[in-house]
Length: 380
Image (cartoon, rainbow, N blue to C red; front, side, top):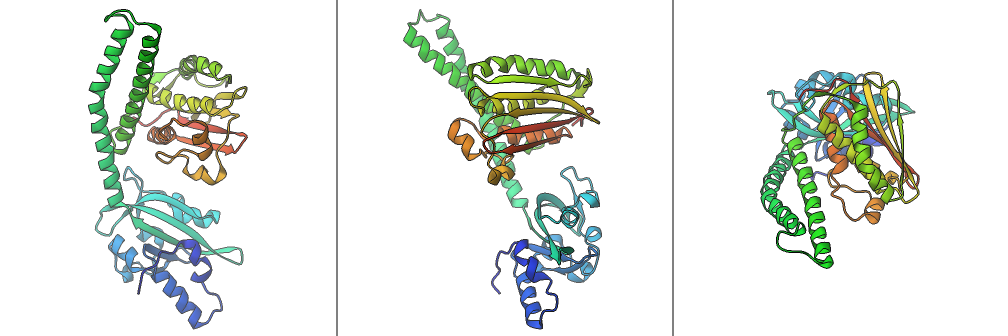
């Protein structure tokens, strides 16, 4: 039989026929077993009621070993660090509890103990407004991850190789502007200023590519130190206040008086996230708008927030905002420059430090980003 690609939502109505005829049940089975990816159907008790050949091949089991067994006990899962995932945090549990389709990346443990990365989509099966089970469709993304790793290593090597010629360009441009080869007229000086600005922009891109490469190859190191969050915020504001004034954007600061004087965090990575969020907010806020910066303590976390009165993110594109190289269509039309890596990088750094990056946005009204930073982050 020819394999077809079917999403979980396609099967929601057909997977559990109620008083249907044998023909309807046969059709539901045919639909289920024709899914090209791995597919597992669980009942209301979380037991595996159906599993297709692709799923068995990916996980290394035989059908008799998993059929009618509790999904969470048989199909084991870990996070990126190899730590077991709490059953309550598993996508299939979340889909069952919330009644929503969940799509995410996770890591499955095969029967032979090998850990494989998988992209998972889980949909609850609703009957008479009540969940009666769940359908999970997943695929092995080992090859995709290997390709991404090769890309990251290539970017790292290429970026390092670009450093030397770029340094030469900047050095000689500075020598020219300082008059080492004779005085420059105003037109020549203007040309040199453009060269230096472009070299600085390229240097910033190289730094970004190297950071992405470090994260994706697992080489990012968290250098924890005792820092003052207020002082760090002051440094960032000092850098961006002139930029905001140039764009006629007002910066408003709201720092909670109860935030700790000192926290343990990586100062450079923390500052990078602050910088990325504030830079974006100013860049995508029209003249006469304002950007509100907040810093407050919430339980065991320090929350840095940036709220703008800019263009907002279209609701249809919000699920892609942290994807690599993605830029919202309205933002790209306003500001042509941009790598689409800033938010991706900030999200990954935040997660590597044990925190998170979240947002809410309405198109045409603005966006708020929240950097949730634990007071005691991971050391590596």
